[in-house]
Length: 382
Image (cartoon, rainbow, N blue to C red; front, side):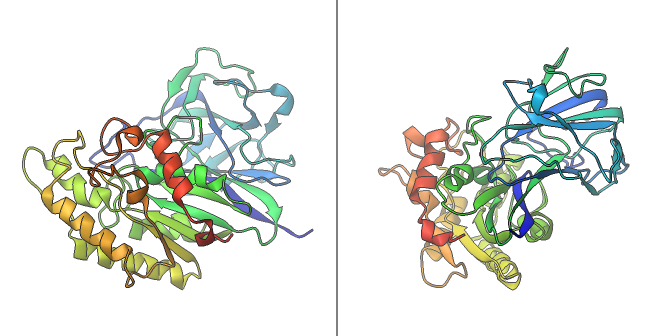
């Protein structure tokens, strides 16, 4: 059987040098860092991708290890394997670059929990990070690569360096990249549950799977938080091995973030015309690369607890963009009506109480499930 490397996990990252952060950046020095991931698809071998995007100096990897997770920061030593890089057990991730491990010849199944442990002997400085990793990671002093449980462990709620995993799967395996903001990334869903709506939707598929390149706070047109979608599409979508479809949810933060950041002063968010132009450009980029583009209506957020986020101008623009997406002139190959899936029937600009995480801006586990269940699988013929 002919095989190929196909992305089974991805994690988009944010620069530690941005002027505004929802989560404080951090670094590591003389520490072991242990983080877990759950591949969306399986294969006969796996390789791990490490990244130092936005880094100004190389990051020294004093050792790396892969094993099956037990619970918390525990691993099953019997499943452990040393990760090597061009045959060597140590390596450097170049400044601004990436590093791919040598293949680990072990079968990987969708949904299995894998743990990557890194020993970071030098001072990394503040690192690029994932705001909503698959689950809480842990760090501990010194070199504890193969320890069944870390000694002196501390929790790390952000993700660092581990930006992906590829599996060796049958050639022709096709996957979708979920691309966008916190509704893609899964903010407010239960950590460690693979509870985002793309992850839940992926488990409905009978062929292929979905990897997640969402960034909470991300925008279509403006940097921070993270590079804006039009800027990061090349790296975070077009270079992902196996991608054939792209699922896009974006626009909330273009509408609400300016007012939130400026509060109590007013600030203008994006207009409907600007979002339509940007979404049209994004769909064009995806189509030019031969990909199928699936858009999503912008989710409801009336009454959010974040001061300055909810404005009448933003709500008007959201209604206009969603009407365009549900009409006949948009450029997408299909559209998922995310808003309708979770809206309060009595007040459609609000998230239904049963689906509200509590902040009026993000959905909980039940809301993510409702969105995933509302997707017509014919729009993702992987």
